[in-house]
Image (cartoon, rainbow over all chains, first blue to last red; front, side):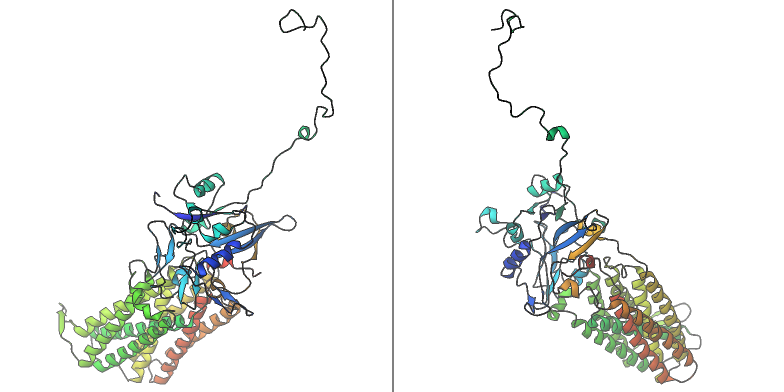
Length: 245
Length: 326
């Protein structure tokens, strides 16, 4: 557990479902190390394409008691990735140094077996290049020394307008990501499969406060003019027991 | 899951090939331990083994159509320690090689005795190679079955019955073909192989229909609750994030699967098991070579449909995330 495990922490309470992370991911990775992200028939009736990140929308409850959840989904960079051991060529691997799960495009034979072994549907096959593709946590950005230090983050994190996405080492208890998980009830997706995803989600949180009646109505008169107090009588008790003034 | 025709042909063709190989070796062993001492010519085994080799080769050829980068297929032998697919990739050429050697020594009639047992029986080279080929074939059945059985995210596949059925259906179809081959070549092994094929076909039908019944009852381990981590009892998807197609919507779904599965299950039960069993039983004891060829072809068509159903019936956990297109 002492090893570095980079991951995203996505706050479902903040996400507004704007898809800015989707488009910025596609933009950065189309021209980056992990590209191209091929689109097929992009302007036709039935377009199809490769994305590393999708934003889905769910609704809980029945109208009018409903709640909308915008749910960004990308590779979770599992600590126990089930997609890695099944790869016959070793093209699918988990990096020792930072825990990022990657595909070596030069070794991938395009058998799609890894995608069968992912319960999250995080991998998307590129039929044009003939290799499996997935989120790289922008591995070509986060270590780029030519970028300013605060820009060395995944494209989706930088793009998120309300700041719903945090990036960091979830094994470092002092990191912003770890603190967010700890303090806000961060959880993993489908824990029942034992994949131990590195990416965490922060739950929807209702912000509410209880107001009592006396907090709504002022007891004193706010219109009272603060004037000079009346002089106490001569025999009224005083501080030094000698005189009132 | 979407049934890919390359994989349907791969698994059924190598299944028949392996089964035929096991049938030939079993028949040879039956004659060796048989009391009457009757034998079969080397040419019979050699030709049968070449037939198995052709089927295995066709299966291997079909498998290349499944790969997007077949030129790199040699790399897939690398991770045999962890991947059943890798183990299969190693075993297919191994079975082919042993089948070739088995055919060769039979063809050349080269049978040096390797071991002599106390009861006077001897183990010669063709028999030893046959045992190796049959053993490799059985191991290959396990590998092929385990490729699917170890995908725990498809509950319909993730059971021992997947392995059992790959084994049983491969053996049944191989023995049926071997029986037809023996009948056509007028071999004394005809009746032995026909009875074995009949028994295996009925057994395969029982195990496969048991899995059909089981698959009708399995439920996904995951729900939308755990998929998106919301504790709400009532969750529905409004949008999967895109309105077109993606790999996730094409690879893991079969359009119109439920209807077709019902129809094809009936078809494969009849064509794959019932009709061949009737034909095999009818041709027992007589010289009905063509009837048995018909049984083998009918069974192959049935098993092809069976494999389609096997894939289409698989419901992957990731489908939870792709239920509403908007």
